[in-house]
Length: 167
Ligand code: ROI
Image (cartoon, rainbow, N blue to C red; front, side, top):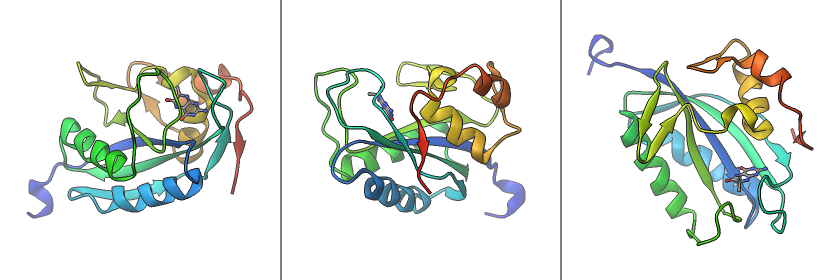
């Protein structure tokens, strides 16, 4: 396909892990995402260390955000990410908001607002989660979050909640 036939969208993916060597899980996932057909890595944030949001009886997380260009429709991108979660040993447990080897979320997909049973974009809670907002702001300080406003404005309203940049 030549350029005039492809319709590339800029999307942002949130990565999180708090089990089985979280930093390595994130790095492995980065490579796997970049290798998905129809996905190109554009920018990857620093890794961040963050205390768990939700139940406190679980290890701290490592979080990051990745910017990609993609010609995959949003549900195909989501399915690709879910396959990577499963490949990296994610077990879905009954406990809501429990520990996980890998969590991959479609945070933003171009300028689209998506409200499907399996996919809400921009991601619910994006504006309240320091472990999403700070890495996102690091790689896209000028970003306009569809329906929510400028990333810089969201950031000033969100305390860091113990978030620490690692590298
Ligand atoms: N807490 C942090 N710090 N980072 C996460 O990625 C994360 N993911 C989750 C819940 C359980 C809500 N808490 C989190 O899904």
